[in-house]
Length: 175
Ligand code: 5GP
Ligand code: MG
Image 1 (tube, helix red, strand yellow):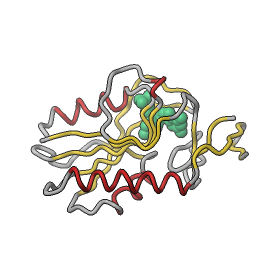
Image 2: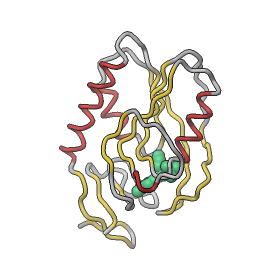
Image 3: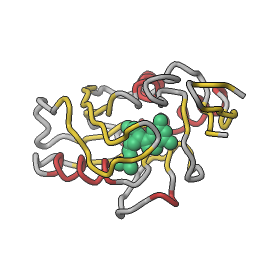
């Protein structure tokens, strides 16, 4: 059990399990994108640890860029997505792989995929560390998922509670 501010969290997924799953996803991406030079778009802040673990295990020539979005206030989805840092890379004709920490309602990814598709990429795929199938509000195709989890608030491995907990090397769930 750990405490962050006013809340208690219990261990959910260990670092070893997370990292071996990420290695499997990296191997799949390496195979699926052989001969392509994909552009990874990392959704900050939450995806930074997942992205670093994933891209360093991906044996491809690739490019990596970053976008920053927010849709959460403390532990509740606000339902509206704010783009904080926009995309300035040329993505026309590129194979795009979005790297996200967690797909919850799916609204963030649905909006981002739409924005990216407007820029005429060759393809768009989503790689997410976590997915809460029971929270989904909009249909969304996720190509690579680390773990499906219950509809409960989680922290660690890049995900925060009110700014804290991102540096935890494992995943924890609200007790
Ligand atoms: P969505 O638009 O799918 O509802 O939410 C996407 C964003 O909300 C995620 O990228 C993540 O930043 C945040 N989020 C969703 N669920 C959780 C959670 O359980 N814990 C944390 N820390 N953030 C979450
Ligand atoms: Mg996110």
